[in-house]
Length: 323
Image (cartoon, rainbow, N blue to C red; front, side, top):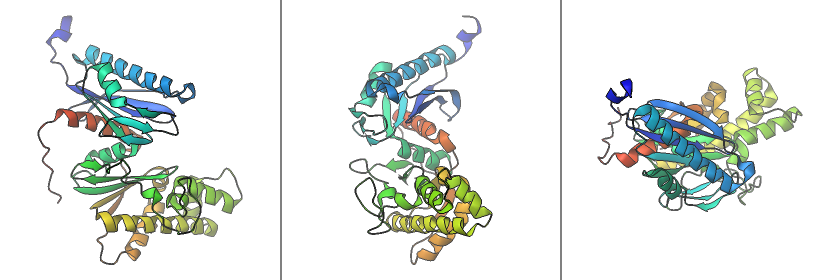
């Protein structure tokens, strides 16, 4: 035993963020410290059952690592997954990417590890982390919007994220901003994500530039260098985004609006015109602070850790008063 016997065990939780291609995991201490991090491929090409088995195996390894290195196994686990998630029932209802339907993941993880587990939607879980420990830290009401392949959102209220009655709250990408416009795979026409997602900007710029390999990052560079074609494509996206965001802030009145995902990596090339476009559109509404996300691709994992710790904290967290 030697030294180890004299060390007091470190209380920690397992955090797992399952993506379409890779899984990120961490053991997280009570103060949010990342005690251990690991990654592995999701392996979706092997089918949904193999993916689920892979998640359970990864979780079991993390539990063993904690027991060996920190004197006791994890006290709880948090899991963030893509697709349609019923957080209350703990069921991963559907994922086009991973091919699963109605998988009782929370129960499977909890049984596998013998500890309480929480299941969350990847974007809402990432939004939870941004709101509590990232760009929205200390804010009582926030809206997190991720501009990626699509556009997803998370509505933060008093340190938690509102999932809605059926798990669809925050789906801002499907607010119609251009009635009768481009058809969306969701079946509607003119959805925000057809105009302002990273994928939509990539598509529009590839067309305008006549280069099929050009993407949103290239468009942002061309905007910064003053290319009038790029400025036009970019401004169209910013205008659509501002229309969608003003609808959201009229409904939700958030204190902080946190923007993440691929498009946000353009920095002030996005934020300067976006803040202007939102300001021009509001009348009586208060413009929230509009800030870039701070946690990058660690957000999902950190959020999963927060979900796990929330299972263990029975006392209500006292919210800091916003200053």
